[in-house]
Image: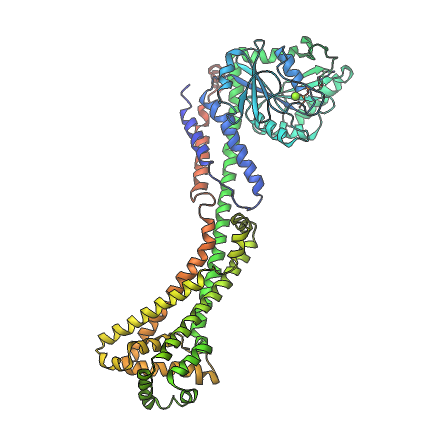
Length: 587
Ligand SMILES: Nc1nc2c(ncn2[C@@H]2O[C@H](COP(=O)(O)OP(=O)(O)OP(=O)(O)O)[C@@H](O)[C@H]2O)c(=O)[nH]1
Ligand SMILES: [Mg+2]
């Protein structure tokens, strides 16, 4: 049947879209979302894709239910052969056994249905995680039975396997007993069969003769109340099993056998069962995928939040640096003492401000005569700036790590990075001092170039020569850290004095407009170098987010893929006669 090619393509597209790691972060109830994703992927692989690709393939009836309900016994009895092992220990069946007519063996042996389970054959119990395939000529061709592990024992793997198998079934043969039929777990499965409109029949097994009538009545009522009215219900009496084979006598399973044989023999009935379950599964998948898309979006938002918290931590570090270069604090301490060495004595400094003209001569001679203090001042400036960058980066690292550790998603990422890396993340990186020092050196080189260029342009070469490019450069560096306000009291006399003097000297050489422009250029250059250092620091965090999470268009693509499945669902047409009947009814 080629009429459902569009649907097959839509399903294949959807399957590819689900192949991403959609939920890597601990955002919301991520375990539940991962489970939901696994279920949808499972149903596509195990059932929808192989079924839509081969609508005429044999029908798979999965025998599921509580442990000890008699599933394996029932399968053996229906196959009239010991194809699977019943047992007294609970649970007995750990690996599923599929029984098919030899004519259908090839379809099931090839990894069409349930491709994730490796196939085994032969006698004995299969290994958990495998699918044992056996043949029985007594089963009609066109319909295979699958003996599933239980849905309710203490073995988690069994419950998960049973759920996976039921999701791969064209038809559920749900086995319960007179003792267990009102248990909650089976009803959870039965309701999900109803929600997905899976073709279903219930076998009430091991019924003591005296209980038959009331239990069947009650079970029918429960089916009714759970929206499952009309579900075929078969009862199998509790009998003494023959010692030689432990199988139920033919008359006990006759009604079930006949019902299955009728479906197997009638292509139309079989197609109707397949169609019903298939449409239900298609609709269910199409409605579950948009929920996954929402969650994938939430994951991306979680990642974006983590990025924002890093940006804000390092943004704050940049602001700290900006404040520090503007508030004059750089011009205290070591820089101030070196400046005083450079210019003369402390006393000399204090007498400066009113006597700039006189001072200029003094300064000129100081520059000419004493080259050493200018190097020391530069070193002092350089280590002052480097220390500032380091402490800002330390604070940012701590803040970013705190922010990440405060959210489950962030903790997740940090944990993945490993304990050692996480320990390092909370401080500035070990190479930062060196990189900061070299950035400051590069900046100082840039400032000297600025001064040399400005001098050449202004034809102030003669004047410059007397002050020297180095000395002018140094004054300009000091200007970058001079207060544009904010220094008060005694500091004006010291730190303020430093900058006032620098400014006067520079203005004397270049003119005041040029000094403003040069100062701005020098400050901008330093800021951009520091910005680059901090960006590299921030990248230690953001690089951990690279490639994590769904791609940008994942959610939209998922919704679109689900919609495409919905758009093509009607390619699963009713069998011809049913269609004719439907039309005759005016539907
Ligand atoms: N007397 C009697 N024993 C039965 C009947 N049906 C099943 N049993 C026994 O009950 C036990 C459990 O039956 P199984 O067929 O292994 O049950 P199951 O549903 O496959 O159990 P799990 O594989 O654990 O999920 C076995 O010892 C069977 O021999 C019955 O109608 N009469
Ligand atoms: Mg069993």
